[in-house]
Image 1 (spheres, rainbow, N blue to C red):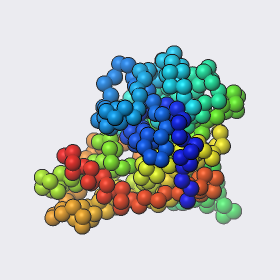
Image 2: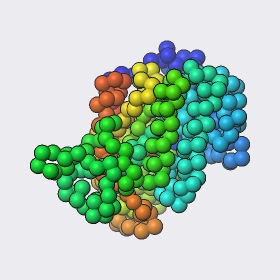
Image 3: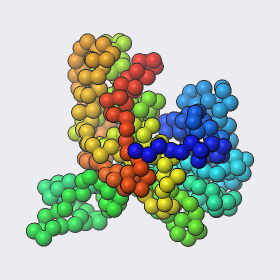
Image 4: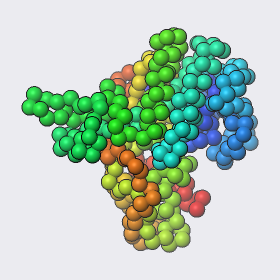
Length: 368
């Protein structure tokens, strides 16, 4: 298992978009401490009131510097690149909450597509040798076909599956699980969020092929950990469990319990981001995932078990469905294959999901 090379990062100027967010704050923390010692800058929107608590300690100790700018304003991005003298850009900022993308698709496309194009164009203007990482998403794959029966059910629901899956000599569907980077990027069944990330990723690849830029792409499957945004399911589960431990909450209110997802720890995913810059190939794409699928119900049951064993939860929780949390379309199954990242980057996950949930519950207990 490869680890990022501290000598590569020592003294590098790193500009992070989305620095106050979940992944951005963790990346800032990792890059500014032993053994990396990178010079970290963050792009902060001029008109927003970002939540600074995720990076408060880093600011207090002068570990990072913030630069005002906006993904919708290419001039401000050019200025940020020049002010930071960026060697590397991690483009993490996006409208990343899938349910919001259904409610506000225009905002999602503007932020995720035009924002990414502005980053790319600004780098082209300032210095095409700046390395850039684009954080893609497993949501880009859209509807993944598990087997022949699943295909027939999805065809009945959506009427057309495009691109169509491959069939064997007997006419049955060839399963697309686990998901490889070569899987079709299928619009059917996906969200405006997934669609926007797919278009943005295509723009990144265009800038590699047309302008010779060094853009490295990953497709992260679900990743989580302490500080995850409240709207995400792992946060909802661990927050409500923390309330059950501290305040006696009796139920667990969630949306779709049957969706199966592939969860990794955010700290493992960030290792992948660093390794793709060190060892990846521009224009290629690498899945970052665990290779294991868990339903939301299984996730919740595991978190409750950990809470009982390690945090003194002394009662069961009743599951309640909140229909308002259901999406217009919800991908039933996403399990990834990280063999390419292992082969080319030396990356594989090392933090168990049990440890991730344990860390999340511990963090939640300090905040509920």
